[in-house]
Image 1: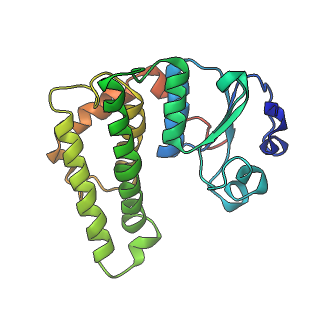
Image 2: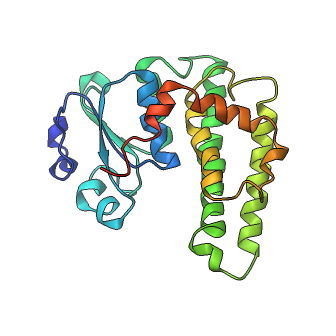
Image 3: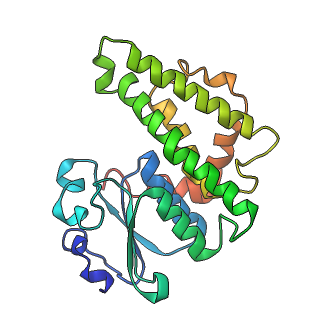
Length: 232
């Protein structure tokens, strides 16, 4: 199969099928991959796939990601030089790091230190902050029962405490800057969007704001955080 033969191309056609095709939207999960691509200097095209069912549940998108979630990619130069389609942001980050030999050590304890924190984000910080957003800012906020909000507020605070402790005495969570940071920090940034800094007692975690500031000071992050553009 050639890159242009993937069914998703019938709806989001590739202008240059010789570069990585990114299908995404600028959410905390989505920008992980655009930021990583910018950091790694890999050429790519970005296609805006909104969170609306008309996009993520379309037959074309489901042909690449049957889980109907952004982001997803097609790499025309995959293993053995053959095209590969991938979904799940964590899997894509590991793939891109291994492809380039950057943002994650190739072997040894450092590799697993990065993966440990990457999977911590995938299984803990992201899902819990996502639920916090639903019950604190979005439709779940209308539920009178306080227990769902309390559950996710308390769990989010616990996770922030774990991260704050891990950052004591270091700039980046796994030692050197890595795909773990690329995965984690966009979710921290989402806390302000949820209007939840005060309820999470953000200022009680002194290592988090400097960590967020260091991340967003990087030129690749500044560019990648808005790709693909929401408007346009």
